[in-house]
Length: 228
Image 1: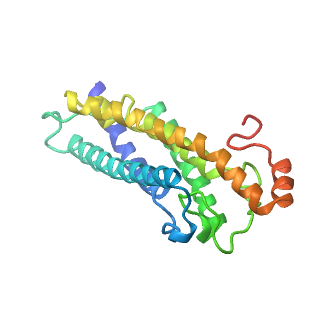
Image 2 (image 1 turned 180 degrees about the vertical axis):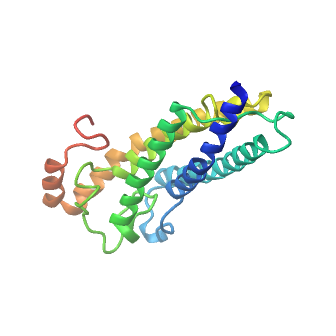
């Protein structure tokens, strides 16, 4: 009796899987081309920028691979191949929480892309025509794109690496290694975020002076309202 219930649950997971994979693609994709060389900053910052680009590309590729594998597994669970060496994937409350975090995080991050428009890059710099944006989501926290990104990190871990997911339900040491790598690959990006925030604040303070100081007083939180 348990197998059919889980199989039905896997079918309900398919549309959410498509939405989650699309959200992660949007979230990890660079919204604008890199800045021109005259706007690029110090060598170490360039190394950090290239690391971010590489990690985000890897994340996009991994999410698409896992999304396709999980979708294929769900379809297999509802075909004549059911039970012939394929894991049974299903949806859990933890998966749903992960999906909600991914969707909310993508909304916040994409809102940051839209708010800054052509001046949003993955590099820490000031471009020509750069203005201090103070409307949503920058009216709530000063670095909303990072908040959205970290939300998707937690969400992706809950979606891809917990019971019910393709990785967790698959047997074999290769898939377990991938599961562990996926769960921990977000850590270096979080470290980069923590290092970049003071630099970004300092750069904006230097560029906009009193205007930035006034905005920082009104929006004192960097990532999480009322906490940090």
